[in-house]
Structures are given as C-alpha cells and as structure tokens.
Amino acid sequence: MRTIRVITWVALLVTLCGCTNAALIKGGSTNTRNDVFQVIAGGEKPLPDYSRLTVSCSVKTIRACGFRVGSKDSHAGMTLIVNIDGQMVRVPAVLSREESDTIGTPVSEAGCGIRQSFAVQLQLPAGRHRLIAAIPEEGVAVGEKITLASGTENVLQLRPHYRGEEPSRLGPYTATSFREGIYGLTAVLNGSRI
Figure 1 (cartoon, rainbow, N blue to C red):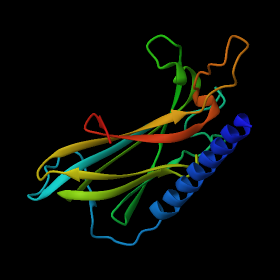
Figure 2: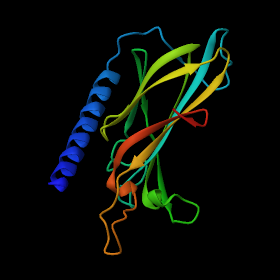
Figure 3: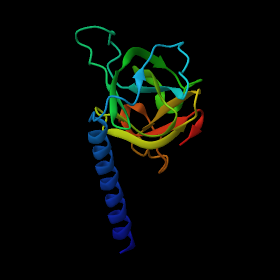
Figure 4: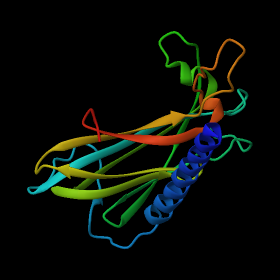
C-alpha cells in the first residue's frame, strides 16, 4: 500500500512539473510589452537608474560526431527565450562541436556532442523584475523574481540539469548525462542561486 502511495505522489509531482514548464514556456513566449529593456552591445555602461543584465546559458546536446557546424545536414540550433516583465527576446544558439573526456569536464557532459551557447546583454530599469527563461525545444523553463540595483552590471547564468541514465547492475545510483536530455534549468544571479 505504501508503494502505491509513493508512486502516486511521484506521478503527481511529475505531472505538475510538466504543466508548470508548459505554462512558463507559453507565458514566456508571449510579448505583451516593448518598453522594459533594450538589447545592447558589450562595453556600454548602464544609464543612470538602469542596470545591465547579461543572460547566458550553455547546453550540450547529442548529435552525430560527424556533424559539421553550418552544414546542410546539421540540426538547427535551439532558441533561448528570455521574458522580463512581459517583454520577450529570442536568443539563437551558437553551435560548436565538442568532444571531451571525463578529465576536467563534468561527468554529465563527457563525450561527443554539440555545445549550444546562448548570450544576450540587456539594459533595464533598476528594481524588481519577473523573469522567465525557457528552451522550448527541450520543454524546460524557469521563472524567478530578480532585483537589480541601479548602475550595476549583473550576470544571470542558466544551468541545465540533465536527466539520469538507466541504473546499472552496480547499484541504484544513476549518473546524469547530456545524452538523456534536459529536465530543468537553475537560475544563478551574480554567483548565487536564486
């Protein structure tokens, strides 16, 4: 009986997380305002009463190792959607082939794949903002409230959480791997998890 309850709770949580991501992706993909932020080039100082926010994300995806960046047979890169207070910007991925071993690399990203990097610099009024960031192709999103001080330069990193591989015969522990896809994102503002 206890096992059935645990399975029911796990199924409910998985369903709720999926619904939450779908709602965040839908809400984040909608542009309702155009006066919240401006996309800027690097090196510009924030205006008075404004702050600068650099949003970045790096995700490794599985593709054939014969992949050539820019070739006709390559898959198109993913898109990062950033929505702040109702204004949305789509950030295309910069693709690069990556083959790494487990030395000096997180185990979850070891192996041959394609690195998809996203970055955008925004200038927005200082204060509290509602942020939604999503990668619709993977079905993942994160929604957070951030507070930015006037005249500051801030960095928001979106870190992926990779799914786990099937348990091995060695035990119930699973290792996460980019080969299994992404199940979530964590927002880190200026080095601190939000």
